[in-house]
Length: 190
Image (cartoon, rainbow, N blue to C red; front, side, top):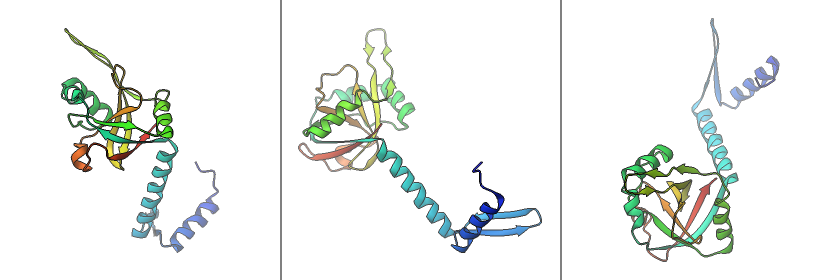
């Protein structure tokens, strides 16, 4: 699969063994190769570096200040429909409420506007007998490096583009010790 010759693979395995990253055990069934503890640490470090590189290549940074909302996020995130859809899509039960952030700098606002043309995860519109629950765009994110979180952009909203809402399984104000006016950094993975 790697288009390496048998000799090249043998040479690489010998180098890994010399570096004490693997142990090779010869048996009558063939050769068994396993990672040493040092090899496991090195592999874990490589995977972490790859994850960071992939996420940073596909992320947008948005900075802003915390503001109080009207409490509408709490109403919607308490509804079974939104809770179950967010859990299905994001893998967490959202805390009933959103954290509202006002964007104050040009680069962050430009990044917010880029979200409108970036692929998102979608909670579809849902029609009930007496009302329609609007669709919501979701973007996986971190807030002050805390995950899991997501930026939510309802397709029907009263917020201007300079205000974004963040959800998480945590009560973000408590978990991050935030109050109105505090600055936060959101990393949105697109």
